[in-house]
Image 1: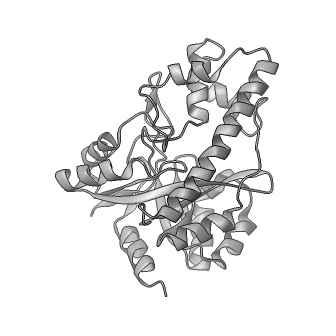
Image 2: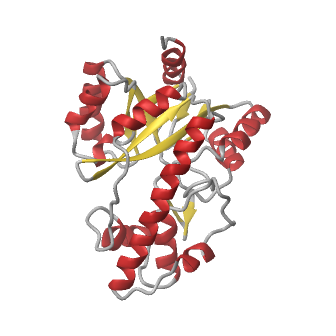
Length: 282
């Protein structure tokens, strides 16, 4: 029986590996499929699809769209999108501009706290230079904080400064998750709510399901077994596709963030269900 990891990141956003390496790691983990779901960009999909053809593994083209609801970051995954859609590309560019502004605000807050860190420092910590359609995120800032010696690890950077309860956390206005669901559907894709256990907004799931949400990421590296059982019950009650993802971001300073590819996986049936949901659209 083959499995799929439906949530991984590459160098196109805040991962540390090129898309080809994600595909190779998925193959090494014995998976039948892997999704490329970078933050607010589809720049890594073409390379991954070519690698998938070469290695004989299914690559699911995807994206992870950043939204806000109730003051909380909410991420919506989109699968089997038309990643060449000019409308989608324009919308993702708009989201990246908001992301860039958030990064500036975080750095301003860090400087106010006495941590001297600039965007040049963050860029200097990157493995490769960023293209215009790729993103810089909080893990890059966390890595720069580690390199400057302000914190000892990525997790400490998020706990003390960059996470929701961190001293430098900022959350500028963004689109709502309902809008992300609409955008994904308009791009021919299938919208799935990412890691619901991180939000404490269970009421949002049913609301989004009424507006076109098709699936729920029940199994995630940051979910406890109790949360997975809880969200499995919700997905079954609402008739949502059950997905799983490691949320792999690669390795930094010897630590894999969030977890290795394949650490959370779901049967290939979920991929088939996503395809069916796409094809059954009116």
